[in-house]
Amino acid sequence: MSTNDKLQDLSHAQRERLAFIDFSLQYFGAICRQDLINQFATGLAASTRDFTLYRQLAPQNLILDHQTKRYLRCEAFDPLFPHDPDVILTSLSRGFGDGLSSHFRASEQCLHAIQLIHPDAAIIGQLMRAVIHRYPIEANYVSVSSGTKTRIIVPHAVVNNGHRWHVRAFDCTHGMFRDFVCTRFKSIGTIKRDIAEKESVLKDAGWQQLVSLELIPHPEIATPEAIYMDYNMKNGKKVVTIRAALAAYLLRYWQVDCSVKHRIRGQGCQLALANLDVLQQIENAQLAPGAVNTRN
Image 1 (cartoon, one colour):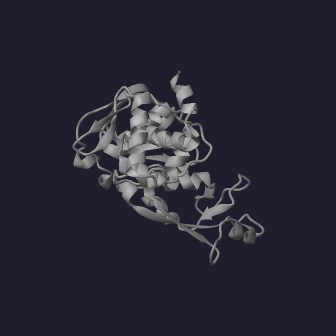
Image 2: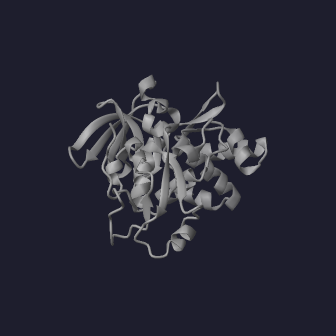
Image 3: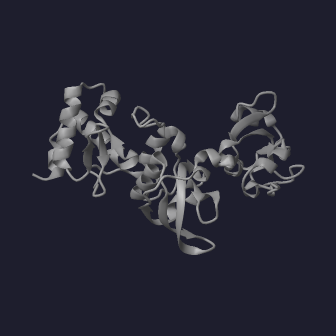
């Protein structure tokens, strides 16, 4: 009997528990029995049986660390279940895995998913494991300006910027934090070393800094009340607090007119940025409609 046939013979509830083990190993790199108990409200004996069955079906996927009592992902891991990229990213962004005992919250490290062109599922797994376990990766990456190059980066978050998924990471070559488009990774290798202090998310100024965007109806709008309602505005404006590293993406996605005196006409801008001085604090401000990057 094939592995797939064995899975089909199981109850739906047991397949879900095995899929949770499979997902956790692939995207978080580890899982323990208590994680399964927390997620499905099962008993210790039942969780033990689930791990035993999973090991019978996929012995090459996990190994027990006797010191921590956690099952760790093996290098020879081959997913027991298909994991669709759209489902993966939506699950991660909504906090799937928050109950795991790895002391992280997935929804803080993989942000809101919408319908985008998704990267390969294996690439997502490699990036997420590097984010969760805080280690550098060596990536074969294709950029528009310089083509394919090998880069060493230290990722700390996977982000939907409204148009595509990117990973926020420290670029070891240029000594700065940058955004890398997830679909442009051709291959990723693990580098077994601790990250340096300068590579830590705590040193990412653009990520740590919060900015407030004061959004108002565009002066071109004849009936601003409609925009008040669309965006649940209070006192004629909506204030959005966001990380400085992500603000330009939101301004672009919402088509906010960031030009001086809001001069954009007839291009679909229904919002305008009232506090233009905030652009000086925003990374890649030139991505926003009508804006120029005025950061010092």
